[in-house]
Amino acid sequence: MYLPNLRYKVCRFIAFIFLALNVTCTYANTTVLITPTTELKYSEPVRLAQAVEDAIKSHQIPNSPIYWLGSSLLDISTPVNKSAVIDKLNILAQSENSEPFLSKSFSNNAEWIEKNITFKKVITPLDFDTIRISQPDNPLLDGKYQIILSQRTNDILIFGAIEKPLSVKWKARTSASQYLVNANVLSSADKSYVTVIQPDGHVEKHPIAYWNSNHHDIAPGATIFIGYQTLFSNYSDLNNDIISMLINRTLR
Image 1 (cartoon, rainbow, N blue to C red):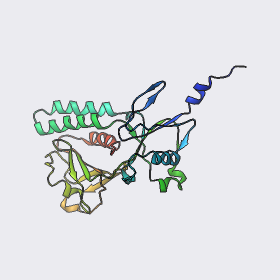
Image 2 (cartoon, one colour):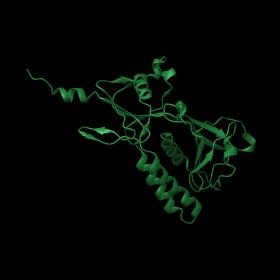
Image 3 (cartoon, helix red, strand yellow):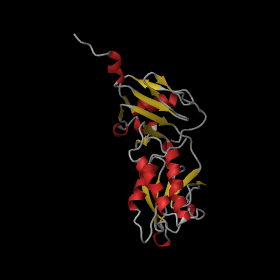
Image 4 (tube, rainbow, N blue to C red):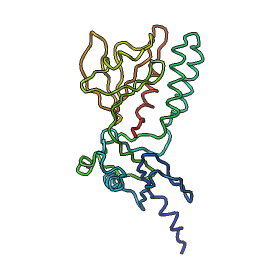
């Protein structure tokens, strides 16, 4: 009787979970260095709560509390349209060379996405107290994943219709419009609304004009995206493409 190769059979169901400060992963017989050297292997699909519990036990900074809102579960795969978004921004940078600030904005955003967006974020809670008691928030992991247990940051990223991505200090009870005061926003920016991507990847629309002023909280580590908008160009598809990339941003 033919017996399938046991190693092959088991490997099909291995879930790799990577605890990341600086991270890489393991492929077949090749091991890439992890700093710190932490690698969790499972011989079958594993619940998220179990993986997070194991990651907590392996956490290398015991005196530093975990910032759950900014922690991430990543699918070890490149976001599907990353290359297309970068190409689109670079093409726009060349076509708008008569407007140097707009051209630089497109090229600088393309460069940032290339360097900082690596894997696809799974939008799901990671707070251990939540996922261990809520079945819908405790999915079964089957494949290769990365877990990032983040420390709280005091920064906000401003992205989009400015010359280049800008990091500013987070302040409690500060609105999106207040963060933009010193951001040198381009004339081609949307003046009515911005998109806020909270650290957990959830997307919100925040008003910034005097006529629609309404306070919305912004968490430490969030991203404020200023959309492009002009009388003669419709950038709605571009704006949505950029937002789809920023959702995958991670905190370290």
